[in-house]
Length: 180
Ligand SMILES: C[S@@+](CC[C@H](N)C(=O)[O-])C[C@H]1O[C@@H](n2cnc3c(N)ncnc32)[C@H](O)[C@@H]1O
Image 1: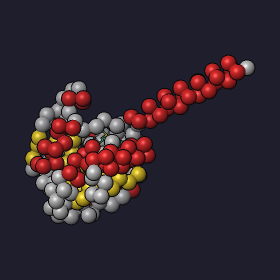
Image 2: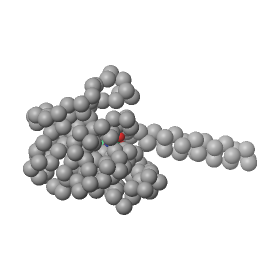
Image 3: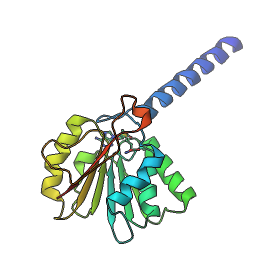
Image 4: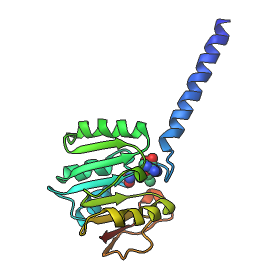
């Protein structure tokens, strides 16, 4: 009987572990694939992220881009639909000493308005990027900059391009920069 109980507890634990591990990568408009760390700073600097700027990342993953923008001096915001990643981002920002300049919100990127943003960063799949293209056109102030990674806007003309697309996404993607 005790053996049966132990097997049941072990199986439930394993199941919960697998569900947790799988949910770490899940995302409705893109799975969790982080931007390569060594590309983040380059892209943010190229977009003019610095002190006095307001930065937003739509689908902020594990918080690495938001934290880097805060390190460059910006007031830095992330919107992310995974609670796990939001809490992990907050923890990482505290550890990095940037928690006063970062704000991580749990939610859907389509449920918010981004008019305060000077710079917006997006790394989501094509359908979401196209929906955001129209949304941001209406909401952002003139002069605001949008950075897209790997999946780009269809109609806006980029003023700058950086990096290259690789077949293997682990090698990093390319960036396009648009001005409203
Ligand atoms: C490709 S990853 C990019 C992560 C991060 N931006 C980076 O570059 O390292 C996409 C992230 O967006 C999140 N996401 C997908 N759809 C979303 C939505 N509708 N609202 C909020 N977050 C979303 C996923 O959970 C995932 O963490």
